[in-house]
Length: 219
Image (cartoon, rainbow, N blue to C red; front, side, top):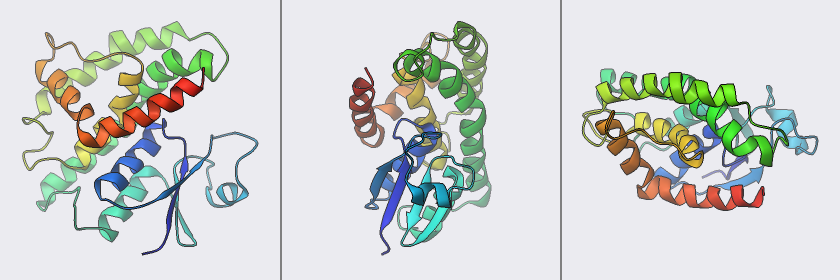
């Protein structure tokens, strides 16, 4: 197997998704810390990430950008522990949840909540934008929780069991966890239980502990 190297920052929701997929599939990998827009990025990253975004995956001497593209490659290259169900319709639903998590959920949980509550002062050296936090808490998250409440099937989003849908949702919801927020179990009992169990699972709990140490170092 070719050596695999992941470029990015672990607290990025998109990097986290790829890290979770690699861990879930028991694929060994190295990591190179890269902050988007930083002037001290490795030349190899700048030369092979056409949009300058993370994550970037190096496989041998070849490179892949975009978390969804990387996860799709991992699924084809390492099929022994699949993240997509055999049923074609269920597989498509898993891909839908990956898209929903990467767009709608990321905007609220990472862009408006985590970035302002956790990163604004420690990393961006500015005051949090309260209007972004309020929008996430009062408008965006309730709609997300309403939708998840209607979709959850037991401990997973799909009847077939754990899939890319749960991995993607967990990767994004971790940002909300770091910001100190969760679904209200009185309003969204299935969603609250689902997200709590998902983030306390062996897969995500280990990643979260690593990230806590990194966030603590930010000051």
